[in-house]
Length: 230
Image: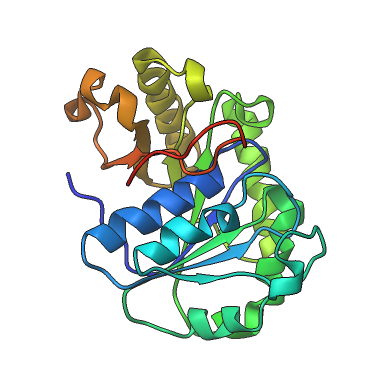
């Protein structure tokens, strides 16, 4: 089952969901499939593991990366690039917006309301059930409501990103899939795809999932580790 997204796709999720890693890998996946891809780092809250950390890998593949103005790229100041509005208005290919974590970071989406006016987009909630805030269906629903209220946009689908980083096992992925399916049933939204790390791909049968699988090659890593080769 192939994974192909088009148009404007916004990724939201609580702290520790792995949202930025998913955004980076989603951009790489579609670029390697021959699509025109753009990604904007809108995470103005969390100073760690933001998609901007993979700028070199992304631009090396021909992906257009939009960051805060250069003097503020590594700062924690809430500076939004004026290019973002232009990206939202472009229809061709795939435009990914990596929004800030939880309801606080999602407020930047509300600030872009004029750019979104009259345009359709997908807003996908990245869920890692191994994090405290999203360890229960009720918790996931609460986070979704908070994000929607802050972003002033409705979430349109879910992404299952069950992981414990280096301690992830095939069973973690299978159990995480089952959990996110419960959340889908509770909120009436589709499961757009789930993630599986490249190292575990051979140990997980994609046929057991009724959605596409995105292979994760970790690009956002601590300074003492190397990003996976693309």
